Length: 275
Image: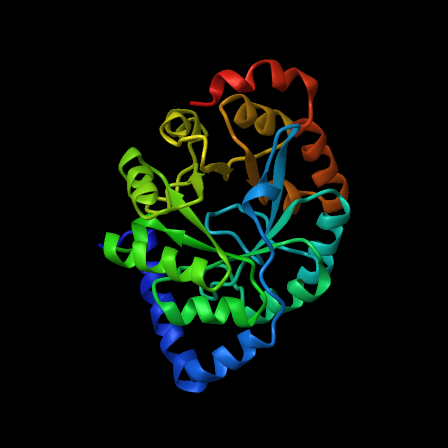
């Protein structure tokens, strides 16, 4: 029986085939050429005085009980920007997350901060889709592809001006991400194959990521306490979705998380976390 990740990737490829039949690569390249240059991401995510926040937007979650988006995605993104988010992440996968590239384009138009396109990307065509919609960064999941494909997509993302944020869940996947030239490694507490959440994964894997690479803690954030725990474990940035969706005020929620990432108590312990 296929894993959850394998099922999602298979569905994403079927949907991709439909889009490729409708829109040629040349058309995507023309649309991408009309976009402003992608914003720089790496230095924005890594600040000496705070842990930065990426606010994630998804219309529905992957696991039973995950909260669903009750706002318009563009308005939700604008509220998160106003609350102090450094970056917006939008999941565009259709079958499990009910997302779309239209959501990506709408969010790009609604905010001034960088936008991360999250989907189950396995082809260069999808990178052009992201850039044509104004994405500044794309997510590449190590477990979703072989090493040659990963290295090729990281290089191509960077050549298009976007930052490849490479997702890992194991020590071997961290090594593969580094070998592929990742500038940002997202350690996902959620195992996409199951999909269970284990917040200790970041603590275990962060020491394997060198200082030159941004350490992003992804998933499992229930509130400010979890942000501080990730910061103490060495996170430069934290991606949060559930905690923003669970309440009715994403602007207030992100403000509280940003404040946690700036707490003075963190800076006495964080230097020891850097390898």
